Image (cartoon, rainbow, N blue to C red):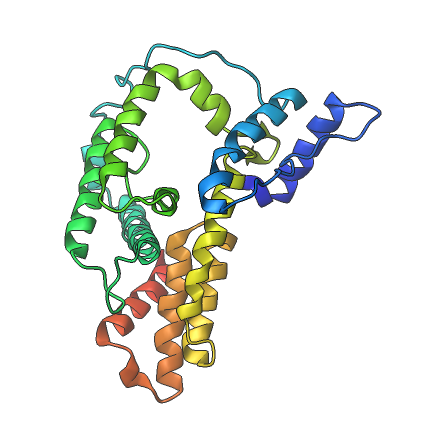
Amino acid sequence: MALGHPEAARAARDKAEALYPGGPAPALAPPLPLPAGPLRYRAKYIFIPFATLTLSDGGLVEWQGLVSKPPSMAPTLFKLDLRGLFDAAMIPVIVIFLFMAVFDAIGTLIGVSERAGFLKDGKLPRATRALLADSSGTVVGSLFGTSTVTAYIESATGVEAGARTGLASVVTGALFVLVLFFSPIVKMVGGGVPVDGGVLQPITAPALIVVGCLMVGSIRHIDWSDFTEAFPAFLVMIGMPFNWSIADGIAFGFISYPALKLFTGRYREATPLVYILGLLFIARYIFL
């Protein structure tokens, strides 16, 4: 996530230059020789291995072993502070996390589903079941003390590979159980490079950038000739990376869209729910 952070990038360059005194430092994200043939079928196999080998040679990624015992869950398992839940000071925190969880999940589901071709007339069939599965994962994850278990935009990599039925997610889950015993090598590849000012992801970032490039084609469905449609969409797209939050990007869209429809006299084109959500987002930024 810190790939574009100026301080983190500067620190990474300093570290690379220290490893190569008197000579040019290797590029943090090395240029990858793309093979001939369709990108989606071939390039995905070389990004992570090539970046790992190159950065290992440069000293930015270090070998940490292959096999290890899975860490104990005792420090976080069922360590719930239920008494603190009823503290008035926790209400803003709970509301913020609710907004983040709900709209991160909605944004991810819509984005991935659109790329997979699941949307029908702009709506996701069986969306209630998808959100129920997502919320159930969030609750179970909190009991185990993990970070939020939710739908992630990285699921688009599976969609680009042809995943449609959900079997890919089952296989991915099984592999996550397996890699509990191979955490050193997983940490080496996906753990990032700690630098002053943040953590860089030079190994996994190139693959995700390519996936983002493939997904951005969906913006062709936006009516760019209509300012009331184009401007909110633009705010959503720039709001997510600039704020490092899918929820904030969606909030910008939900605030600007009904406002533009209202001020241009086209208020009937937005549903009452959209106006209500816009007001709620405004209240969130004012009071939370």
